[in-house]
Length: 275
Image 1 (cartoon, rainbow, N blue to C red):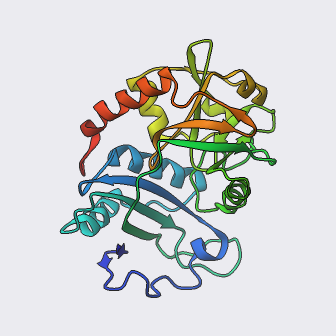
Image 2 (tube, rainbow, N blue to C red; image 1 turned 90 degrees about the vertical axis):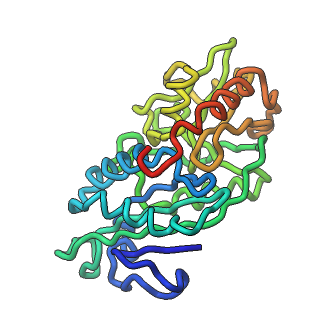
């Protein structure tokens, strides 16, 4: 693991480095991105940094220089050629008084690079018993306030699954704790719209661009009619779902196999610091 914080490459990434009064620590006032690294090169970094800035604006964080983030990414990857890894880029409100109000200090910017194991090609999921709030102030914003996801993911693990999938307040299929959901009905590939409250996933957008699919909001009951289901995310790529709650699915089905193959063919196009 290598870590960079506010311009400095840390000699010990596990040592204390952020003050206890950092607003990201005290109230979760921060945004982040997870970026896959392949052979030492980050995947779709520009798209991830664009979303990082949109998330920061959505949270109302002070402006920060995106070139500083790129500096951090280069620092943790130089002479550290991870065959497969993950970058964690975090921007917080910085040092602040205790409580919800922000201080006047600049944002904290941290970049960490660590090895990552490949995800299995097939997985199981469950439906979370709690809904996403598609009308909330932070709907669609990738913040560090992930406790809800932690609880939902633990709920999945207790049931032998790797992901929990949320409905929204309207009862429509929304997203997973860290994934977007695609499904096939009558041969048509579908995925929830961004209006559902789901995160605008980088992998989601690229798959729609490279392979296609229809964005539509439908009740969670549509899962009972799906012939195939797969998850997409930065760390999972295209991952087939074999079991959703108590229902077994074809995994991988023909559409899932085609989508995964298209992903593998196009992924090299976006590997590099400026892509």
